[in-house]
Image 1 (cartoon, rainbow, N blue to C red):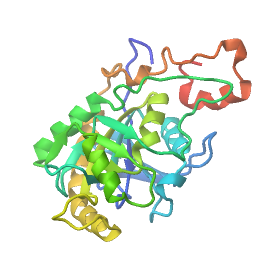
Image 2 (image 1 turned 45 degrees about the vertical axis):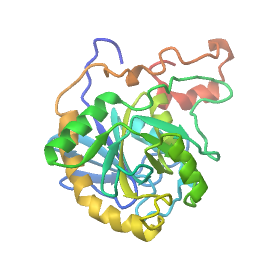
Image 3 (image 1 turned 90 degrees about the vertical axis):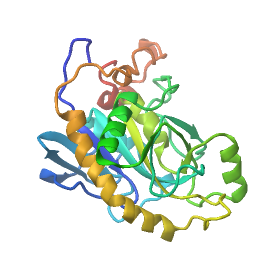
Length: 295
């Protein structure tokens, strides 16, 4: 995207546990989107909300058949990029690591600590190496819009917090939960990395709404996290999440915009380090779908 170029935003939504659709979506159609990295978790739902183009991807697939460690994160992000998405809002169920973030609270994340160990974390590989900055891993522009819309709706949403991404699929031990609390982490979940870093490599603005369902296992006055407790609280959170989505899509996509003020759409500007004559043609062919602007 050039300095003077103006784009019509296309809003991507990645729904986590219990979120498999968008209320009020018009002209909706499920479509199969193939990518050079294979198939995403499910078909993508295309449509318009208040005239704004949007694309929805159920992160785990409809019915939740795919665990966090087996998600094809690269295909998911590539499918959204191929579909023209400019801004992604990620909705994720999380556990709270702080007393002041009770179940039912939304946290609009600004930082991650990535503790995953079994995931393919970059589009770039042997044949074309790139190093993007992840100092500020989420789009503050999109995050600020999310906070503003949550406030208008009366949804309790905390702006800023650190999301500890664990491998899963098991929940934490008590010792792990206590350790992450000493690190100053706000919430814990299993899915947002490498999702966020891949979105940055694809030059898509990305923000996370972390929806607190439990206190993990550190809180002596609350039960340890279980699937039952997560599902129960997610059902209670669902109406708020859908209301926020319905408000934020027109807020983000209601008018054309230029370059992102947070710089997300220029993340690859100086990231490629492999010399042009050393780049693998096959790799470059794959990368065109997500990094065509720079290669």
